[in-house]
Image (cartoon, rainbow, N blue to C red; front, top):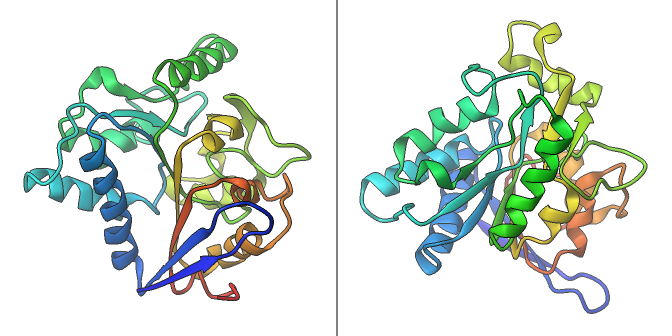
Length: 257
């Protein structure tokens, strides 16, 4: 494992970049980070991602809970996103994903789990209420993020502006193709999703970004060393005062460290 500190310009704090040997080490380091947050603040509000990247981290957190090392009984969670048109029981929904990979195996209270409803009859109302729930919880203490090959965080896709609030967005073609591996065919991939907005993400007190694999290397390069532009949504993280990025060696390949 290697730790790099990227100095930002002006008065901004440092961006910490940890390069792990492989996916397994990346996952363990990410679990270390989340576990430390919970141990130091047992009632932490966590922002959580889905997708293949955090699965190893969730597996490690479950192990540590089962070993008695961490307690989730006072933790509150907010997931980043959910597909529109899929109910919570659908095996392709992110609600189902989180239950299978984390929530069914730890002691976080059901009432403390928040995931946008992709089957809500009034999507705008669902977005507004989700935004309010985050505010009512006092904001997010630690936001964990993955990143898309196109630089998206949550389902904040490349655009001409940064979408501030929780919203329903059209999925980028690259995202649809990338997510097709989880479905029987690309035609089954939902074309729209509810996503936490950039404002709630950026208002998190700490941010942990995870990426692995060579297919993420270009997005990581643009996020860390490129211009801050809405065409690369993750680039906005350069403006956050407390960001840790954990990568495997392949995802870090294009960085000048």
